[in-house]
Amino acid sequence: MVEVVYKPRKPKASPLYQSISEHFSEFESVYEERYQNKYRVLREVVREVVYKYLGCGDLRKGFARIKCKDCKHEILLAFSCKGRYFCPSCHQKRVLMFGEWITENILYPLPHRQYVFTLPKMLRPYFRFNRKLLGKLSQCAYQSLKEFFQKTLNRKKAMPGVVVSIQTFGDLVNFHPHLHCLVTDGCFMANDWFYVLPEIDVKKLESLFRHKVLKLLLSEKRISEELVEKLLSWKNSGFSVHNQVKIKSRDRRGRESLAQYILRSPFSLEKMTYQQHTKTVLYRSKINPFLKKNFAVFPVLDWIATLTTHIPNKGEQLIRYYGYYSNVSRGKRKKEKPEEKTEIIEIDAPPLSKELKKRWSYFIRKVYETDPLTCPKCPGEMRIISFIDQPDVIQKILEHLGLWEESQAPPARDPPVKELTFDPSYSLSQRLIRLRWKLI
Image (tube, rainbow, N blue to C red; front, side):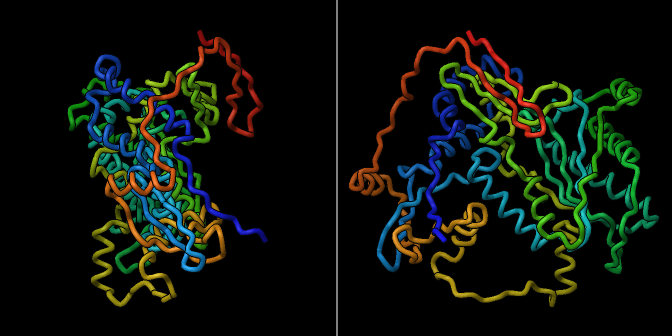
């Protein structure tokens, strides 16, 4: 069997990096005139996240030295930006860590369901301009689940375990605030017994959720009594609840996969094509039932404006724990039953890289089935020997190795192409649709 050798990613080759590096300065300069009315003032966290992303994986921003203990071969590993909901690489590592951690430490080996709560289009802008409302929206979903489950089981003290993921994006990266909830398919009682929930009518749950959301927006003075009456008079309210995804009690992998799914990135590099000549971004997805298409074309500045809308504020928590899974409930159980501890198995591991192997190489190995700490020259094990973050030392080492690159202006563009042919179909279940756009 041929040993697969880990190769570091090339962030500058991605369509996201190219579009951002070439146009973000222009985006900042025209933001007030072109986008401020729609998105309000450009948040400082957006600038911070974007500029950190542009340095992610760049050796000039610092690196770790990794050396093989057998053949002494040495490589450099660039630092990452750790950006969430923007940097594809860093957020994917966060997704994998979250999926494994929540499966081991939060979720019980019981049946679970995914509940998805969505809002009518008319109400979505209120959550764009006041992101604090997103947290209150998640409380509405939990209270609706709790009250509905208690009524269904006829148990006033019944408590479900709920993990809520607040998502702000739709299939085509449009602003679409909604909630993905990982919920026990039943409730815990005071004596720790678990009552499985029978099949329920989600329309009744949807009605309860609608009532709580309208009450919230009314109390926050975002909507009027007249608008509430109008929304309540609609035959189709625009609110919806979906709960058809069910995970069985013994399906550990299913719980982990679902946890990863609810924390997924707002976009995928695989769905994105950046056309440098026309300054446009093509983004593909599954067929949108309302728009009747599976792609969207953005002028590159509009793409940046849309994408950065989903960057959370500093300290903003988009994953929340309620009921039996809340921090308070878990803390009480730990105090009441301190003897219940996670079993620890001791294994031999390099003392300096143990934590890094857990956070970095372990998850790379999990996804790509290759170990970044295996020497590419021999089967030996590589270890981190130092971290280099001083600019003068960084430049000296990279110049010595012939790896130093001066910052350069974006490459000159060829004349624009007047006509391009794309195949925007992304779903294998759909027929290939070939569309021709005339770009002038």
